[in-house]
Each structure stands twice: as C-alpha cells, then as structure tokens.
Amino acid sequence: MKTATGTTVISNGQLFDGSGKPPVPSATLVLTDGRITYAGPAAGAPAVPPDAQRIDARGGTILPGLVEAHYHATYFNIARLEDLDIKYPVEYVSLLAAVNTALALECGYTAARSGGCLFNCDVWLKTAIEADLVRGPRLAASGREICSAGGLMDWNPGFRKIGMEGLVFCINGVEDARKAVRSLVKDGVEWVKTYPTGDAAWPDQNDHHTLCMTFEEMHAVVATAHNHKLKVTGHCRATEGIKNALRAGYDTVEHATFIDDEGLELLLKRDVPVVPGLRFEQVSVERGPQFGLSQKVIDGHQETLDGGAESCRRIIKAGGRLGMGGDYGFGWCPHGEYAKELSFFVNFVGLDPLTVLKCATKTGAEIMGRGDEFGTLTKGKLGDVLVVEGDVCKDISRLEDRQNILAVLQGGVLKAGRLAPRTIIEVPLAA
Image (tube, rainbow, N blue to C red):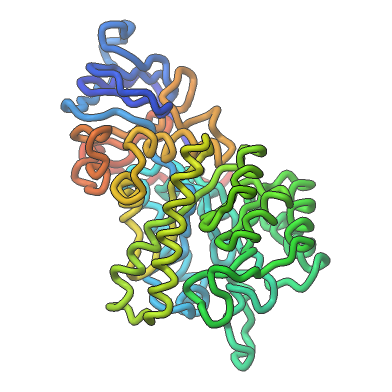
C-alpha cells in the first residue's frame, strides 16, 4: 500500500491519540511522507512547507483509524446457516467481499483482523488492498476455520454430500488438527480461527454451553500454528472452553462470554485480549423475530448478551484488554453498522467513551500484531487517521453516521470521507 509524499496538516479540532487519555483541544496533526511527525497542541506545531496539504477538522475530532478486530469479509446478508457457504459461488463471494472492504474503509476502519473467511478470499483481498487495486482496511487474514466434526460449524447434513470445505476444516483428533493448520499455512493466513464451543444459534445440537473441540485438539492447533509463526483465536462462549483456550496458548479469545474467576485469572496472567462481538447478540434479540429466529434461539442470545456484558465489565475492571469487532454480515446485523458496536459498549455495557475508543484503536492494532505501526497518533507511526465532525469523545455515536466522517487516511493518503476526491484506480502493468 502506497504512502503519501509531502506534508499533510490536520488542524482545527481536538485530538484523541488512542491511548485512552483525554483529548487535546485545539490540536494539530502533521504527517510527512505518510507518517506522523507531530501530534499535539496547535501552539507547539512545527513550521510546515507552504505547499502542505491542509485538512480542516471543522472543530471536530482527530483520532486514529478504527480497527475492526473480528471481521468477516465474505459474510453478506446471511439469513440462514446455508447462506454462510453454499448460497453463492466463490467468484461472486469474492466480489461481495471487495464491496464489504470498501464499505469498511468508508466507515472509518483503516485496519481489520479477519474472523474467518470463505475460500481463502481474505488472503487475496489483503493482496489486492496492499497493491492499491481494491479499497479496504489493512487486513490480517485467517481464511477457513477449524471445527471438530459434529461441532458448531459442521451443520451441513450428510445427505447433501457437500461437506464444509469452503468454510471450515472439520477435524477428528489431533492429527486432523495439525493437518488443517498445515493447509492454512500453505494458504498464507496469519490467524487460525477455531470453534472450541457452541453458540445460541444452534441450541439443539451445540448451544452456547457446549464444548465443540477437545483440549488436545486445541493444543495441537496452537503448537502447529505457533511453529509456523501463526496466531490462534477461537469462538469461546462456554466457561470451560474459554479456560481450555487460555491453557492451550490461544493468542486471543473471541467472545469469552461466560468467563469465571479462574478464567479471568488465566486471561490476565497471559494478558490475552478478548474480542466480545456482543452487539450481534443484542440485534439478534431485537431483530430476530422479523428474520424468523425461534424463541429458543432468541432466548439463548439474550442469555449470551447478559452474560457477555458482565464478563466485559469484569475484564475491563480487572485491567484486561478488549478489542472491538463483531459478526457483521447477517441480515439483522449488516456490514456498515460496525460503529454501533462502539455505541453499544458505552450505552449497554457501561464503559466510558475514551475506553471504548482505545479498544477500537490501540488494542485493535495490538491484536493484529501491528501496534508499533498504527493504532495511536504517535510520532513515527503510519498516518492512518480518521477525522470526524463533532465531539466523538463525548458522543461516540457520531461514528455511526458516515456523513459525519470528513476524512479517512491510510499512510497519509486521503481515501474516504466527505473531503476525499473521487479517484480512478491505476492498474500497474505486469513486469
């Protein structure tokens, strides 16, 4: 991905640097050749060349680009489980995924970590984004997921005789686990996504208190992945599944819905971040009836919502880390509503806006393993910046409306927002 050349100055706004500290009023941000060279009070800003590009924040907020830490690029208007993997051919899925990544950038998300993807699309999406062929967040790819046979994601009935190869590897035992990871290594992913537990979406076979992988399988995944310098995460709702993941060496935990005291102690000891993805539970309860979700499924989502919110409060109070992201791409939780996750954590979970913004910037970058490159407005880091009209630090819901987004920059290049020019993609010639 190209970085800008020359100098860009963003001024006339408050600056939230991503650290969680109160914003700096009347601030200036200076970018030189795509990297931050100054972030602080306008009065202390250095002199800049007369031809510097200038962006007026219009009294609003200058903050790091947001990080979607649980991103499903290939999910699109899913209404039933079948829509996850057999609704469209891979060719169309790839096009839909490119639409989703462009939308994420328009919403202010300059980086994203995949939470699972059909047909290895996110690996190639990342390649296209880095080559400036497709607009989207900087991606950390995970490709196909891993679940035990008969587990949460192994829902296609046997009579279809089609398997789940486009979406997941269904494993039986540690040798299958190692084989699946080695296939992902060959695919070129960075993260290995697993399903140690069930979910409210499938209450009769694998509900949110069911274990779907053995500890031995999980440990084999981690050992193999870490040997190849890949990271591992997992869909963990059930209490024992969370603890199994932490003991097995998982690098993050998705959801951590029903964490207990022992699990919290393990989490803090290893400083493992959690990506709760809780707003999906809220909208499943609120919008579920109109999409035909059964009352049993809706009741399960309500239990997950309440338990997950309490777990998040405990994790933050104890000094743990949360990333912001969720299962967007369902009919009742569509792409483009990512920032509603942040408002949810303020209004429902009860976290303060500065904490949530830190989770959505600094912690998100750390989860991606790129905290030294972006996530805070710190000298030397990439100019991945979001400029929003209004006081986001007091009213985080300002992020929900794309009309409030003035500018989205990646590496100092103005890519989206109301101030961004329409651009024509230049396709590089083959060597």
